[in-house]
Image (cartoon, helix red, strand yellow):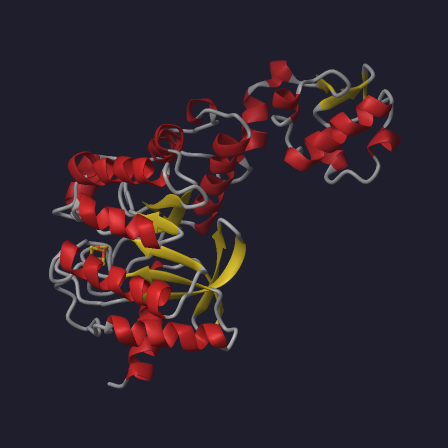
Length: 354
Ligand code: SF4
């Protein structure tokens, strides 16, 4: 298999662990400097672990196994970068033959990019559970973003589905150490990912963990990835998680991250977010005593809790009411979702909602 075939195969396989497909196996992803086309690729598809949900698990015989040499990968990436096809790299891998060994290869790849080719652009480096602190330091030194996947909100679920991994004794200490290292590298950050729907975990558990990770370790983003069954794995018969569930988790995540909500305020039904409406609307329905809100006097915190009001709209409302008192829907002209907002507000004491 030549280099081109290897890169093509590894890119294709990396789709199992990816976000939005763009073209030619390149993905657009949110980075600290905006949305970028990234080459998302695996250093190797070999893995010594046997996670029940994963296409790369050790016992899955039909998964093609390849390893790409750091020199080749760095050269291949730079070629794509020179041609303007990609503006960043997301480098991940299976765990083989040992976390430390595969991380060393990944770090070597990024080191070649940085030192030999002088590449200063975006690199997201996936960190393997089980690596040493010294390796973590090297990863943080070279990457723009590092991530270590928590996968599940509870230790017992992770142990059941990904034997050999531990949130308490391995993943959390690594996240903590990364956040300490990042304090010395402004502009770099860390993220993590949860798999949604592979076990009996509830949205409440996932969002409690996400809030903890944001508040305690300053993670930049938590990603939620809907479970999809993979043929010839122990979970092949399990139904896929609804994409709508993933969408509701992302909406709730924004409420926690940017709108001052705590996970415990969110409108769960048996521990899960309702699928038929967004979490902020469901929260407003559960708190009718707070509405309607007088738009002329509500503080920013309360404005952000009104369904239909995002940060930009809240700031626009505060700007307009500084200029004059808001008395009618005309005064909200040009504001997005105004009919929805009117259902939850008063304008100078009057209700205009339908
Ligand atoms: S360690 Fe990662 S690549 Fe390996 S089986 Fe588990 S999830 Fe898949």
